[in-house]
Image (cartoon, rainbow, N blue to C red):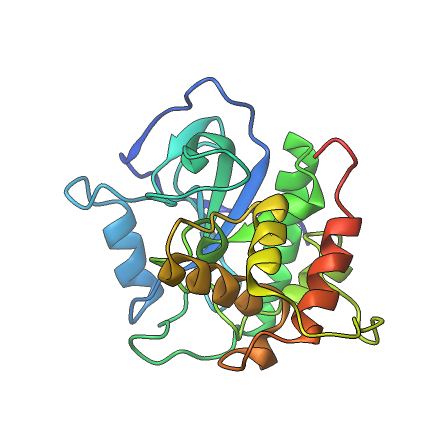
Length: 236
């Protein structure tokens, strides 16, 4: 059965600022229920929105037309772009998040997201490597959709990149400064202080190496980042 979003218009949007859409950014709602999230995303006083919300049962709600600039990424950065909202389609996933009762994303929700995201990438010709999480584009502020989100599954469906298991390991643990420089090449904003760099490393791990979170920077991190960089187009 084809995915049919339920219209649930939000007043919180503005024109895109001249940029072509070339990013997909995924979020979790961080609220108790999908109904709570819909109310907030459509509240003009809240000044937040997304293009879509997917609830835990897999129902998709269409909030903002893809041609318009939804207000979901906030202060953010990716690969030289600081107005991510003008370049991205934003999808919210109903999940209570780290501050309430963070849990896995149900099968019905993930299946609906796959179908929705494939259509978005096709319509806008968004390259797979620019399917990102909110924590990727705002690492000092955000942790969503978080380490429980199944990025590997999406990558198998052609949505995003995800390093395979069994990669060759470098002979030495990575140098932090060199690793941060490579993160910047991939797209992360690494900032100018130690805290910002640490936040970028943790964001990278939430997306690409979740079981290493909290550990010292290691050869597994380096192997995964090198693989990701090797799969970027030469012009990037």
